[in-house]
Image 1 (cartoon, each protein chain N blue to C red):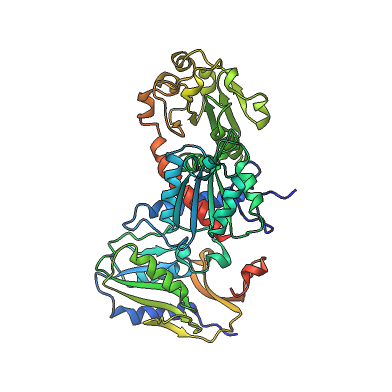
Image 2 (cartoon, rainbow over the protein chains, first blue to last red):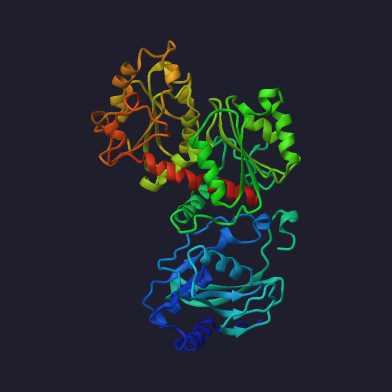
Length: 178
Length: 317
């Protein structure tokens, strides 16, 4: 299928967000695609609060199904969350489970004034009542496929959307339904 | 034969010993521990990854520090922790080890953290619960055999301060004979590719054939210190002073106690480690234990993160 140009979606997100962010706003990206996107948004929007990154592995609801992934990165939240407006950023919004995990993690740092969600692509398929306030594009992606953002660090850090087949765990019993 | 610690997919099912543990499993544990270190510095020092799970601390042998750090680690993962002091419970009434395990399994335990005076007790339990794939066993020290989480936290500490195992000289000093800590660490160091692992101590406190573990043996501490990046002091258990292995605590300190003078023979940036509890003035001088090269207290902090990592990984497998 034809995938939209991630760079163009990024530009569109920046223009949607420009009027919305305040000097107080802190941006938080979900590792890894969301963190790359957050890095870009943080720069283009000229935000002064340092950006944060979350690896939500310890907050996921599917540990028993898929185990702990090999490289969990430490989450970095280098600002006071209490009372602050947050802009949560991810590359692709799908079931909403990652966003739930991310919000739970953020609340362990404090009580934010509000959380808005910005994503590059909303592919539908929600399993939780979660919506993105800012969205680059809506896209129908077949259920068995994985859509992620890649970053080409060799070629100046350009962002590219990529579609791949479902990853499966060798263990059939545990991988089922994942 | 299949490694009894790994499941059919080569994932960690139990943590019984570092011996034979694949390098990538050790690296996974150390990396995961790294992400837990930050959590203990937050406002809310907990993550929900083990929510609803029951962790049973089964301590058939006394321990304050290890039991406490396992308890803290499990609680920071949001598990429910049940501490059983076996001396004061059923075992005292004559219940067998495996009957105790069967009863706790029937209470839907998810993890057993086992400390036992007999080498192999955690293995026995792991074999016994084979029919329950959701049940995990962590060895918290068995006899003279192994203390894998202590070995892992020592590895974590070394990696934190010295980064690359493949350039290190590490000396393990003191009562290696009775030390499960030493055995676990030596296996870990060799698996991680440490080129120079030394054991330093009197003949009476080194196990026979210890060089087969891939270590160099020194009876002269001054020789053993030369060029070291890290010195791991072992606890000299007071109860062993009375036996024939040692002349006296003072005598031991003179030959094998770590003092500033002996430390000066190691590399200038060498770190000093100790699994605790310390006997000041027996195996280590207070000036060294409290000195700038000592990383003994950071070891305790890292120990919690390492135990969190072990439990989180087990629960996911």
